Length: 457
Image (cartoon, rainbow, N blue to C red):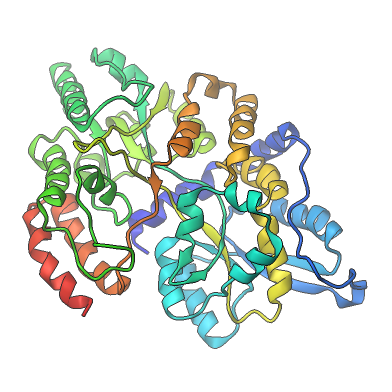
């Protein structure tokens, strides 16, 4: 994966401490039983316990607590299954891939979109659709969000169960808005990309008039593979003609308009910070020291409040604005747990996987320990209440934006070419040239379209 994508997850892994988690667990409501596989045999005697290896990307502080939960809660209900948590090593993608090819991999691991897609193409992941059909009720499936549930159906296979929700919102430093006399984005989301540009300009001009040369209106990582396309979508454009399509659309008038809007903010107006101007800091690390007044980035309320709170930033969140088409779109990630196809214990691994995406684990660990947004729609209200009990400072943050975003259903999975890796190898470095380096304009992406199409032949 690219460095920028890993960096936001590195932030996630280190943002929640065990002490915060224990307090959250105490606030969580009584859990209900997660779905269990039907038609199985009676519980096996202790001598027949099956060990399921799980490569966990949680932090060093969190993994022991998760292990304790699985031992005391999951295994108490499933005495024939022992879960063994193994911390994911640095560069786990390459190492796990080598292990899967060699037949020595863990049973369960955690990843996201591009990794899943590439490994689905190699037929390395277990298709769990038959188990879902057998064991989950319709209301359980409907409780998951469409962008995740549909996004985890890749090339005709269901390759995982949702892990947590991350969606893009606009996070603002309210003190800087007040300092420069700029109105905050409206809470109801009724604003446009024209308003967005004007807001960034006013904030940047206010900083300059105050003698602050190292401060900009906003930040959006348009050079990042999973963060640029939503703006293109909102301008009526696209990247590929259909899911698993072969026709690149980066050269259309609408797509170019979306690319141009981002390019102009970063390189023409310079009201969105250029990477080099803010030491290539990502998201909250640019917001916390006051380099920018707002960011368009992922949503981790507990981790963000801790980091920005330590920096004395008075922050809030808003919906992204609509594009010229009236459409609103953001990335909704497909972070999930998956089972390696080589597992010798598919049924036991499935029991663990379905538990992780069920209410018990989501309440106790996803929300209770890590402070992340749970994958079930029915748990969002509880999530907002819980995190505000633990961090009263979140009372002044409009967390209802998360609930509205999911109900308004504008989070989307990323785009997919038929030959995704071939398209990635061409488009990703081009995004860097246009938006990160700035030595070429959006027309470079239009010119690249023919090469992308040829890569799909």
